[in-house]
Image (cartoon, rainbow, N blue to C red; front, top):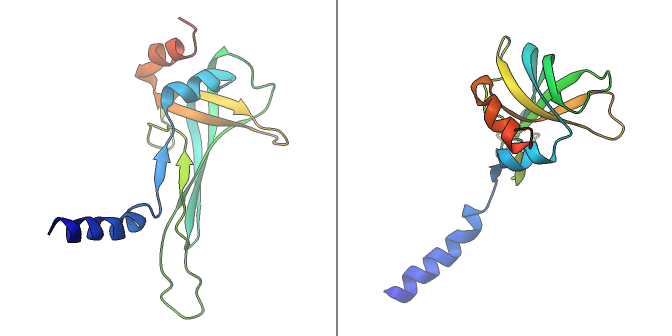
Length: 148
């Protein structure tokens, strides 16, 4: 009995590891970011395919506490991957992927006021949000960044 139970568990392990989505740690993301501030979401656009959905929000910066955006616009971007088998013979399967997402703890919709951590990425004309939390957590994120 014990031997068959162990065999079943070992056979199921690969299936438990498919398509994992992990969220990065908020404190680590804030500590590594070069810009900390507050903002409000001005607009949101979503672009989806059968295999993924990308959400991009334009952010109006209210206040910067650390670093500088260097005159670049600020965007929040996230892509969600969907693991699906093809339904029709001409469709491709959407692959199972393991991926990390930034710690975004807010609803991504117009008018949401929040605290952000952001970074400059080489070759990009915009800065991107690397962590986002409710405005009420401002003091906590400032502490993570070493500003308090």
